[in-house]
Image 1 (spheres, protein in one colour):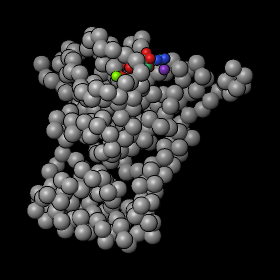
Image 2 (spheres, helix red, strand yellow; image 1 turned 120 degrees about the vertical axis):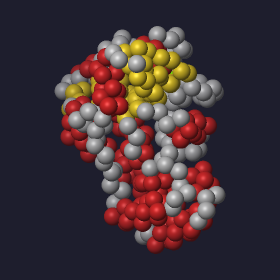
Image 3 (spheres, helix red, strand yellow; image 1 turned 135 degrees about the vertical axis):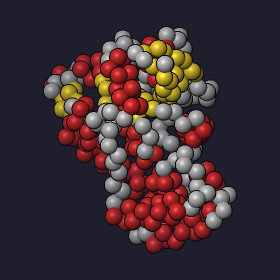
Image 4 (cartoon, protein in one colour; image 1 turned 90 degrees about the vertical axis):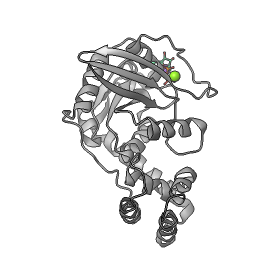
Length: 280
Ligand code: GDP
Ligand code: K
Ligand code: MG
């Protein structure tokens, strides 16, 4: 039997633990995230010809290095390199949840989106074309309701297809960050790629974006490498050459990502019961 190591990644309260419990048969606490314990719970399930090991990671809104949860998840992705990420998103709060997705896309990892709480979407009269949205962002999207177990087999089937490299929705895309920033990302990315000391845990594009965002942890790691200081100097001169003030670049990157999400949702999401929602 082959083994697939899967990590659940998503915002707090998107239903990761509910999904973990229903897949692995565990009975971990479900509810509002306390934000106190930062750890991972591991479980396992036999499905078809596979043993699927599954890890429930702390909830996080982004993969910056500001909170202990963010650092923990990022460290996990660096050190444990799961075969497939299940990015759990709360379907009733897509715009916000998909921000983390754009950061995972930067990382270029094997990934499936579990679009959770479809029951709530349906109750609100929201129609989402998961297939089209998945094709637009290059990640297969499976609608689920973790609380009831709806869609779980389809989710596991998709994990297997992504692992085996046979899912038709998988495609590597770039969220376009605008001409100026894209130019800086490309120059920095190529320099990172050319440095043989940079490890392969994270994609060069992800590292380039994090350096432009002045991510303290990534900066420290790159600086410690042979010729790493040259990469940081290049980053500084690229930032100085941008029309955007260095302090505003994080905002520009975030805006570009939110713009991408809004555009994708505008084409794939439809609210059919507007009146009803407004009158309740
Ligand atoms: P986590 O913080 O990501 O681990 O999320 P939890 O699994 O603890 O779930 C957060 C809340 O969402 C709990 O109240 C769950 O009962 C609820 N929840 C989880 N899955 C679903 C679902 O499919 N539908 C609905 N309506 N609620 C859900
Ligand atoms: K809820
Ligand atoms: Mg949880």
